[in-house]
Image 1 (cartoon, rainbow, N blue to C red):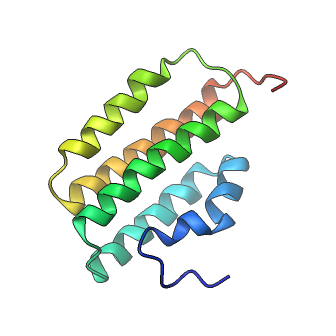
Image 2 (image 1 turned 30 degrees about the vertical axis):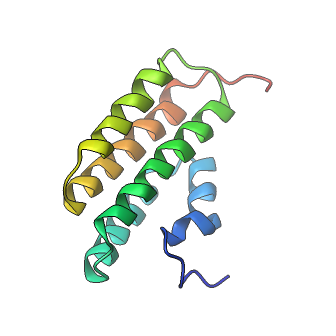
Length: 119
């Protein structure tokens, strides 16, 4: 499936991230995000596009976590914390750091904090 031509993050349309999340491949996901950040800068991705994409990633990761089990973590506080960080960001580089933080936190929850349920 060609991944070029989308206004938003092309990885929304790729199965790679989902497969990596399913296999708890945190290191591979973080590496992919870092490579994506280089592409963002090389392609001059507009700040507002990156910001919108990050709002969506915040939702995608939390849905992945919630689909896998129950947690001690208060998800509204976690989601809101990242939402406000994204909202207040003023540079692409700031958003990139937040993206790594979001992925790392949610993946840690998936890997280390999940209580698997029958849902």
